[in-house]
Length: 477
Image (cartoon, rainbow, N blue to C red; front, side, top):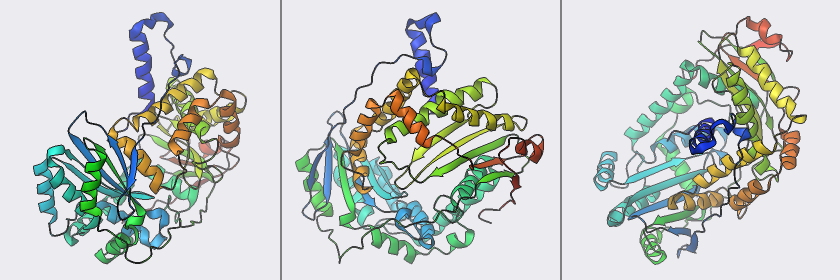
């Protein structure tokens, strides 16, 4: 699914305001809008357990005869040493394409198509999912396929080779895309080329993945004590429990499960100014630093999300666009379970890249003397709350948010507390968070992909230090 650019959403807000009669009084910038408070309460899902202890969450919605089944599993690269990560990547690609039980991949594809259902599986950084959606009259047949995909994936050798080939092709595609080159090199410089963010799978690593490696990872992670199931749509709790007992009731642990601990990665940043020359129509910028002290459970994480939008889009996006420097430059301030980062991204013509870097730096530095005002905080709050609400716009999404909280090990009521924090954030609390986190520091990583007008000397004139010219790497070759 394509993501709508936040600036487009704000443009639509401005347009709709004008269409409702604002005429000459219509604000010219999103930060000048006056928006009402956005109130929202998270819908509650019902919860029970199966006879084997698996947690089940249900959100009933009988508006349409549709039923969704989801199994989330605590699983992913977060818990793996470096040498096992390529197999995990391949597993994520083959899980829903490699057949089920006694059925070949082609037979499964035919059954799914005949039912008009969806059936997907995948693996992210810290959790895996197996999901199905179907009309109520096909529930019996569709649920069997879903249950077998969770418990009896086939991992066909033929599809395994195809998944490896697709992964290799995707890696090789980095070489021909300056935007992906900028992203890849930036993460290598920011965290180290052997970090989870900076490492790119090599041809040798991908080709070395065998079916036994896939099965070993599956057996390690896919256990009932690591799973939680969600059901939503046109079904009652009684019906859901009876269905799940028939599908999963006999799924019980064989021996004691290993305790999952996040793998501790050593990150080795290489701050400095870097240039990867290339004959591209535009130069691509990445600039930023890691924030080890910032996580998604930090007390000021709601303010961080407001800063992410308020600075990146309300200020930098609109300034660089209005000055003709760039059509899509912004900053991001984000956090995960173990660390955060601030970075800028954008592209512009070779003659404008130095001015673009300077404008981004200036906006971030000026936050200390010109923090986000009431209008900007209000607009950022409306947008960020809107994205949170959108995450729960369907019965399946309501359940999915809760499943995520459980398998990711987030504190009880995490999403509700985040929404409450967004609603209660003030201009002062946002400014305090900006002081703590919203800075590139004295030694950021600055990367330009492309050949700027004026070459190395033009970049050095920024005063950020000497420029290191990077040697190209042929990824996946």
